[in-house]
Image (cartoon, rainbow over all chains, first blue to last red):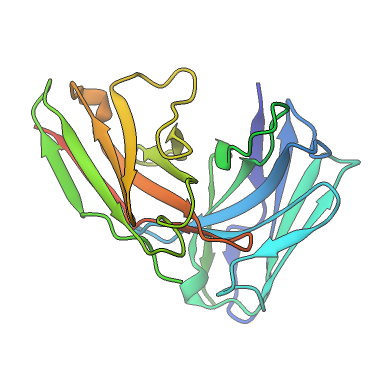
Length: 126
Length: 110
């Protein structure tokens, strides 16, 4: 059973850097079939895709956040991480990590987020 | 990029059907058959219900179905049950390794 678990500070001061880690069990972040993803949900609002990373280290980010986002991967620990710099109150949200099913062995590109972490609330406040 | 447009709410009595629309542009919904739908209960993580417009993952009841016409995708829940009461979000690939979600629809079972 694939499980993802977010961890990191629940409170970050304005202008600082938000850092979260997603630990994966039941699967390998080195799998070629998946991208490892960060998303967020502002309180009472919809979902926003932040970006994702492939096992090779290739990263792709939401254009609206690209200048502040860094996603990295640690295959030895089976984890991947998010850093969001220069945060403001507008970055207060529940942050989710998720697995994105990119490619299957039959040659199809399913393109969906199938396993999600439980989410972690990060509040930006002084 | 703008969020895909969904109606804020939809409702139906048990056993009835409800259809949720998801309107984008030719750069996202209309341009790719990579529309997925997610169900989210309060305080929980989203759950995949539909992918590639109309495909159902294993374990998702066949009461859930998806379709697309032009720039608008739709999710239909037939035979509404109490446990279907939740928020629903559509998501579309928007090209260049970019994704956009819908504004969300709260489904109420009357």
